[in-house]
Length: 374
Ligand SMILES: Nc1ncnc2c1ncn2[C@@H]1O[C@H](COP(=O)(O)OP(=O)(O)OP(=O)(O)O)[C@@H](O)[C@H]1O
Ligand SMILES: [Mg+2]
Image (cartoon, rainbow, N blue to C red; front, side, top):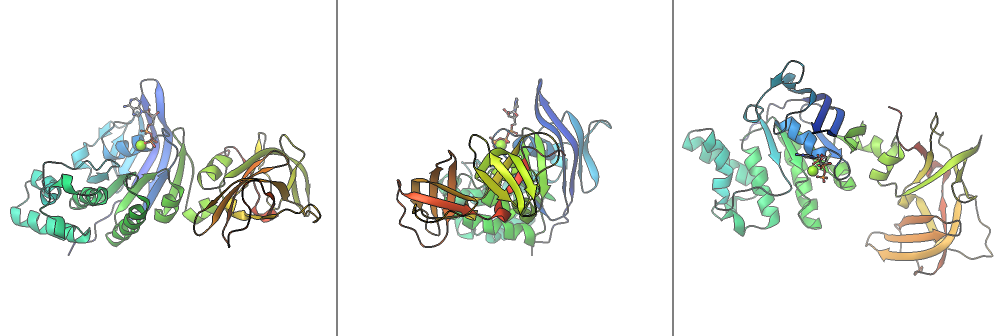
């Protein structure tokens, strides 16, 4: 039986990485408890891979502390830098990075052979891992004759066979088609929890992040903007930049007009349109944004003779896409906003060009600063 791995926690304090004068990572703090999965979510170039490479020991940070299992593997002030092969960290990349001239078995056995383990132990561990990742029947296949999903399983098996205390995944699923991605994502999460492997997983896919993570850290321009559990980050983003990343497609700049018992009246820039929110506006100076999820708008055909409730945009449908479980509409309002709506009931008869009205409840309007103060 594969033993449950003696997981190690990860603690990163003040991690900074410069390439020449360019600062790719600006003082990142991260903690991942033993056996948990942290997802780094952020746009291209925000420093996700650089952070992972620093944890693995493939990149020397400019400043900061990295501890695995409470032991420093990097500390700029104490001049500690444990080499990559002594960190017990596995990595799985977007590109499968498996050796094309070897069979599946040879690929997975390779790191154990490098450690000069006895042949019998190598064979036993490889067979066990191939069974776990569902590659038993491909064991003698050449690696290049595998599908993308199978290659990624080989890469995963090769990392798992080392029994790493920490596993780093850098967008491992993004080269796979949607169905396979979903399937492997579920398997991966199951393996990670079953074997209790402390993991960091990089993605720029919101749903991947929500479904995999114990904690999500949203990164932008080399900084962690917010780190929370998936439900908290989904329901309570601290800023419009985080909201944008977690699926609030409709982000309207504006200003608070008036606060009252019925809620806050928020005027959208560039029009006199007002939205009511029950949420308090952020303190301090600076721009405020009203953020609304596309699934929180109710859409219906607009008939001019009907009275219009508050918090209702009138406009014209500019696109309608049937997505199976929902229909995605884009509407241009008469007040100038472009609004995305996911309608998750039976499709409506609203082709492009139709007049439509969109209503949002005051509890679904978040008022957020662009960036949080912290
Ligand atoms: N070796 C390097 N030399 C110079 N700049 C680098 C180097 N590696 C990364 N960078 C820069 O650091 C920044 C962060 O890069 P990184 O690869 O960490 O981003 P990322 O968040 O992983 O992006 P992506 O989602 O596109 O993979 C980028 O602007 C990148 O160009
Ligand atoms: Mg990257």
